[in-house]
Length: 380
Ligand SMILES: NC(=O)c1ccc[n+]([C@@H]2O[C@H](COP(=O)([O-])OP(=O)(O)OC[C@H]3O[C@@H](n4cnc5c(N)ncnc54)[C@H](OP(=O)(O)O)[C@@H]3O)[C@@H](O)[C@H]2O)c1
Image (cartoon, rainbow, N blue to C red):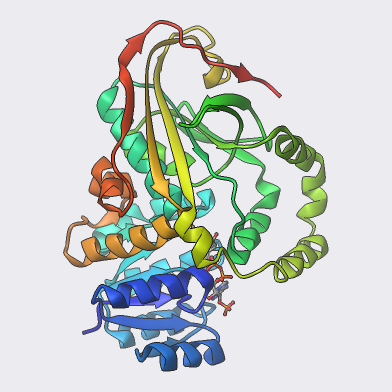
């Protein structure tokens, strides 16, 4: 029996992951819908391949069954188009499912399949790329430091050129604006909803709220009711994002979005090996116990009574994505993950990120402290 079927194996990230999995000794079946690209990769890597598209659930289930694998690793994004059929195929064939999505609706959709996965004895482990492994493990770490926290703010300092696939994925979700968890419920908010100055680990810098998958996973991992995620954003980026609120209906219009996606095709494939080797990301998190003042309003505007801050530094996001995805699959194959929907931090604990190469440890800002910290929160 082969161990893992990598779907989207000839995409930019999929091919890096497939090579790493093979280098680590996993038995890999390469897979995707494009016969020519798949054949080329099968010849290059000398591994078996399975060509199948995702439109027909019977075809997907037959393909997974025929590949005789223990686990499917989905690298084909935007995952809003690929996760559902592959999860369904895995449930029908009692095969574990792992992906590298960072898309909130995809993670929420997989969370909804929890009961079905438990019934089928299948683990569903989405989002084992950089987003969300780094922030999710940091959230789990903060949850241990301050278990009574009722609000989490998380953020990453990484402005780097993304791959085409990531650009396409962002465009795909363009119409959705922003999102936060508030009082235990996922809430839609405008793009660039809040700005804040944050010391991610190399001085205080401007940041803006961003609807990454970390919003959902941090909530599921910790049970903390309020979660907000920020990314480093120089003021022009924030201004552009705010303008997006008014442009969103236009950007989301199908002809414009399709043109932008085609233009994204002219961007180079993804960061080269030189920039992947040199890149690094600073990740920051703050857990707070908020006072009742401001109840029902913006969680970041409540008066914090107690807070804990921790930080993490990782290699380049694409390096972390490849390492984390293959390590997660190894752990799934070892039987480390219980059936049902699991987040990376929930399945493996905060230490998971420390297993990855180049991640040294959590940096804790003293012990949880009382009193009002120097928080600088700006409304738009
Ligand atoms: N979580 C993280 O931190 C993280 C990090 C990096 C990337 N990502 C995500 O990973 C995804 C892939 O990125 P990439 O740079 O590898 O993109 P890419 O080079 O464009 O590759 C995308 C792959 O997905 C396949 N695909 C797309 N839509 C499909 C569909 N409807 N049915 C079947 N196959 C489909 C493509 O196959 P075809 O050529 O046949 O279309 C291709 O193999 C993106 O969504 C990106 O946002 C996440």
